Length: 413
Image (cartoon, rainbow, N blue to C red; front, side, top):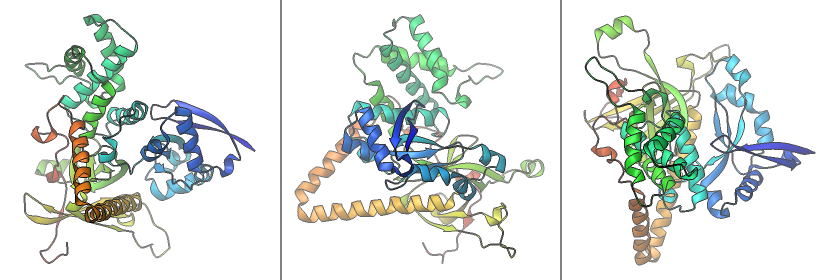
């Protein structure tokens, strides 16, 4: 029996296939179809991309042996297990099959990619994450990204490079990149700051004077410097700190909705409303544990804080020189736990391979390390200041906004 299947790219364009025996077709077979259709280099594309089932409520990267048809049938069960949405929202939710970045593609491997078609697809996804505010960005990042996007559009459509032509390109494309919370100029009683449109226009004028510029590559270089780039995004909530009596009296909100971004480098807890990092931890900097609540006496688990799974992150606070514990409450805690464990196993396997290669040939290993270091250096951007040189960057941690549990000196690390 033939089945019509649409596989989408990150920009929501789709490719339709008529699949014989679609009820039994595996993820790896669908992936191969997309790679052939898009005319991507086979081995590199298989390493760079994966198939996902994605909906407004849940994202799941499919394993090669998964059968997407069966996974779609199981979607209501997955929502019940991992989504914190209402019953009405769950009933309306429907997943789509997406061809997008492999969550386990490391940044070190990605920065060495030179294939333009693959970089274009990676840029589609990065652009979407920035526009939705999933990847917090500083103003100087956004204005440069907007200029690169507009410059690419301007070249694509062969438009005139006079002031009127560039302004029209900026106005047309800015809403598709800039997060809504950064789109308007900040106004005060005495002055008005430049709007994002004006800032992008200034950057676009400078960039348009450069003799040659690869807009896609320069766009990705800025994205690669974001520490949470390439993360799988989870939802949860944490206890927020209150620093004033006024806020204690007049605010009943003790919890903060957060996004938890996990990639092959570490974990970042992001304020979902204000779009900035609360805590960022590399894998060498923390221990973790996932806890699942015990069922009630009647065998049921109500959706209360005490009866939801939690991910605990234990880390050393450099400012207070104490060991701290952060609790993240989320139905998706088991998925976060699995993601962290898989990433750490990948790191250990790479370390073992590197040690074996070093024992076999120290000279070859040295050359390999140099080439990888050179690749990372060449991928760094000079279009914006490095994040560590900025004050009040959205990528900087703000642990003072969280309620952290101080661990005793005798606690294990």
